[in-house]
Image (cartoon, rainbow, N blue to C red; front, side, top):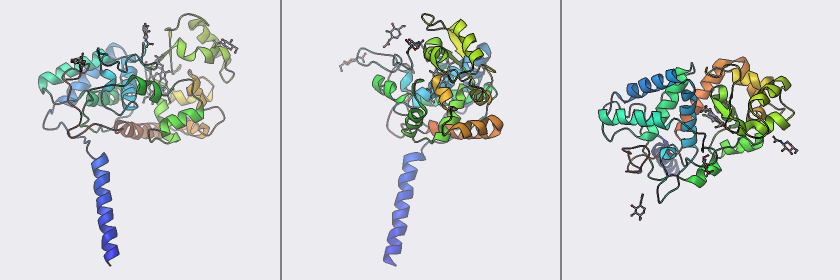
Length: 317
Ligand code: HEM
Ligand SMILES: *[C@@H]1O[C@H](CO)[C@@H](O)[C@H](O)[C@H]1NC(C)=O
Ligand SMILES: *[C@@H]1O[C@H](CO)[C@@H](O)[C@H](O)[C@H]1NC(C)=O
Ligand SMILES: *[C@@H]1O[C@H](CO)[C@@H](O)[C@H](O)[C@H]1NC(C)=O
């Protein structure tokens, strides 16, 4: 009897701990403190994406690179200072990650509506969702209430963001380190249905790999010389680069993945069957993608009294 009661209390404590660790973000976080925050972000994203479709891809990637480096805390937005070299010049980000100007515009709009209320990390999370929607992809409820970090970490950016040179097992472990299954890794990689990559990230693949469609490789070599042209761009999804669909997975089936890491998902390994599933059923892709995005947005947020609401997303207060 006493032991039953003890078990019950233990269970209660466990539940409390779980709640404290994960239940602090909420989709209604700004409902009274800044009711126009979400519509303001959406309008700004819609106009940025209609001005340049690729911006939707860039904003989605910004959220990914924020969350995988010490959690979704807006750290990627911090400029370098005399005392701190931030994440912007890390290998995966330098001359690559973009969208900072759009985030600045949104931040100044929400600051004038509700000063000191909406975090930069939340703006990035909402902008990522609105970008996917603007390009025809699924929607999801963004949980809110993240606070911003006062620092950023160059070394954490270099070690936590997966490289396009990774093998399938390297990709699986990079995502497993952040709590994702291989299936979730495949779903999240479906982000590469939009956006562009620089020649330097896929040169070795188009000149030296064998699991690539030869006509596809030949046409890419025209835009990406074996030396020089490092910043020349090609679409990650050669079929429909500005539409958030499941064409990425169909491309992989015909060996038209742009990055080495893309084609690793369909190269005779354990994730081939998942690529086939997403290729034949776009609804299962968009559902799994949306769920995985919510999960990614929950990576180690700063809540309560930790962190700050930056006034300027580029600088700690
Ligand atoms: C699976 C491991 C991943 C690797 C190795 C990887 C690698 C890359 C690389 C090398 C680029 C091109 C960058 C450049 O040339 O400047 C890129 C672009 C992109 N990535 Fe990933 N990525 C991965 C996963 C993800 C995830 C999980 C997301 C989002 C949730 C994402 C979203 C994007 C988007 C949207 C672009 C295009 C950005 C633009 O056009 O500005 N990627 N990725
Ligand atoms: C750098 O650190 C010093 C000493 O801690 C501080 O006085 C100064 O304000 C800092 N500068 C910046 C740009 O953060
Ligand atoms: C980042 O890119 C700039 C401009 O291309 C380059 O000068 C700089 O050396 C790069 N920084 C790092 C840390 O690689
Ligand atoms: C292709 O492989 C050869 C032999 O390993 C190497 O010398 C060359 O630099 C590689 N080319 C590219 C573009 O990676």
